[in-house]
Figure 1 (cartoon, rainbow, N blue to C red):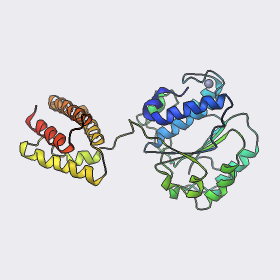
Figure 2 (tube, protein in one colour):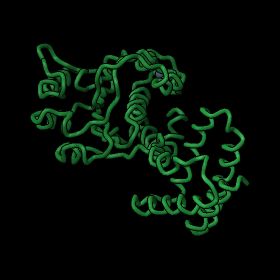
Figure 3 (spheres, rainbow, N blue to C red):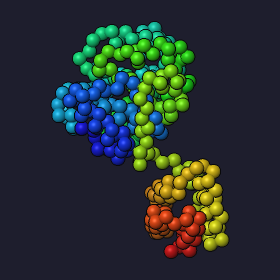
Figure 4 (cartoon, rainbow, N blue to C red):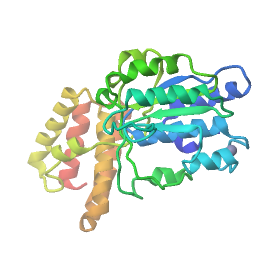
Length: 311
Ligand SMILES: [Zn+2]
């Protein structure tokens, strides 16, 4: 049912929702009426929301390449029951607010819910603005066979996204929606959303093994690369050890970030290909050493020394 791409991205949630959807289709469970997805990748959270909406509305075989009318509509962002709600989406007539999700929008939702619907309705809340079409950024949509015809951005909700009167106006809809209605709030962390809303939602952490990696700190600490010598190796190792301590990091994560950083470099620096490839192998050795429970300091010292020596 759920596209395997999500199994890679969010293994826990993908499995959880697969199970849940099976129970929903057997009429053993209701699908939740209010969800919060928290994590770093709002666009992927959005796609996961659409995927759930697609499966709940599908009248075909529910597979990711189903082309029933509902799947088609959702994949082309034109399904009448799947609603984006943001600073620029789902604005009622005469609503001039452009920088917040307004209380008027909450009332529009309430009005919409008074009409009956044959569909499982979704209201997906995120922060958004107008944006140039960017095919590179929309590659995840393409990989899932969704239309990339999108000119708005996907940003996480925070306190500022809602007008201060909006959450109260929303509560009734969230608490007692008609059957087959789901509200989803996309955010980095539940801390960014008013507790009155959080307390009415089930919260899922949508972060997985392949969450987009921010390696900017790594790049800074590793700025000497590849021009560092034997003598620098211990200093660099010490910097990384401090970083791990100060940021409550774990060595595996840091090594993975280094791998990603070097792979990016590899794409850009054709002249140093052999050196970078060798160092990628050295990092992979370090990951093995960590798995064998070697001490962090020894792993890092050895790794940077080997890089400095070149073997
Ligand atoms: Zn379908």
